[in-house]
Image 1 (tube, one colour):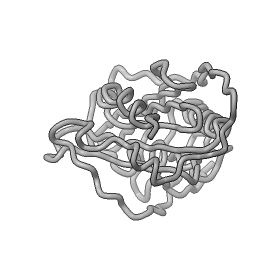
Image 2 (cartoon, helix red, strand yellow):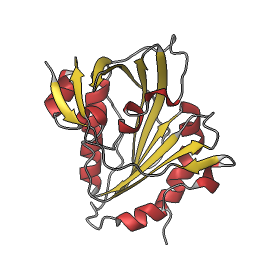
Image 3 (cartoon, helix red, strand yellow):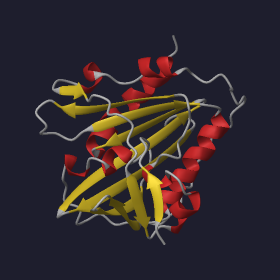
Length: 230
């Protein structure tokens, strides 16, 4: 069954729309269909005072946090490319933008992407969302469970067929809740491996996506900056 969705910036859109950004040997990558079984710390209050987009923007990583050679990518206009998803009933059940991560549709958000100035190194992107703790938890849980529930599926972006493999991975025990997965996108003989790790800390959600090494390197720093008060 084919489901038509609209590409939106979210958990995976940055990688689906820019597949050849980096390549990796994925011969040892093994998909897993296990669902996320993560711990959730008790939340004493479910805050309704979400942070503003301007405040979230201020808490994003910048070039100085990433080190020499990285520059912020200019924001692209909103994309409305038709995408067809094949072979993933859990994403079909969610419908809409779920296949590309767009179901994380929290209105208060800020996003940034970074690339190496000479184009010779992997890219990394950061997304910050703010809402009540329960809404952030439920929304993130649904999309990660749905995506890892399909260890293999295919995305048709225009005339380009992209094979997708997903694998749940352990996330560092940071914040109140954690999710993490590896995604392998293959098309035209090239493969791109992306780690996506999400950390919820009270009413703030951090999603870091990109090269596994870069995500692992900058995750804690990103969370510290995102949750810093004042």
